[in-house]
Image 1 (cartoon, rainbow, N blue to C red):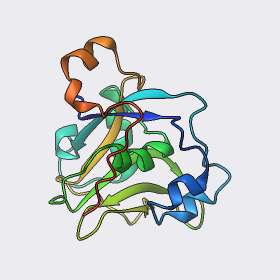
Image 2 (image 1 turned 120 degrees about the horizontal axis):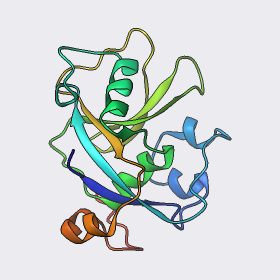
Image 3 (image 1 turned 45 degrees about the vertical axis):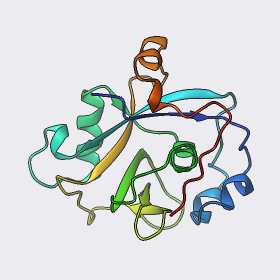
Image 4 (image 1 turned 135 degrees about the vertical axis):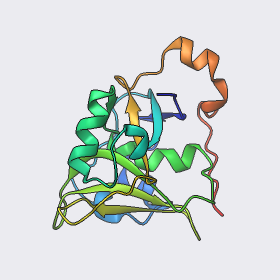
Length: 172
């Protein structure tokens, strides 16, 4: 699958309060399981849909996750959900994106991260318990391969990556 965006994790944003100014997903930030990468690392993100994963109809997260793994996609680190909208302007015409992380439990059922793009950008926790169904057109973000950007992919798709050390902070 084609790389959609390249982001850095493990940047100068290290503490929960570094992200809190931009997002309202404080349940994640306040949890001791939220850690940032120890070293600055580039990761390649792939945007796909349930339908593009060759799943017919709607599906639960477990089925989507297994199918994505078979196609060489992996879960995003939690930090990716916070870094993506900081490093890249996201299309305000999208309703939402799901950041496919290893499901976590803070309160209640298992959750992943979601980004609502309208009317204002916000990061939230999305329950993926037994009752939540993803539709064929739902947009999902995974890490490509091991998550590291190769020199070849960075050279052939330089517009995917933000300038190192720069933040775009594109809020509408």
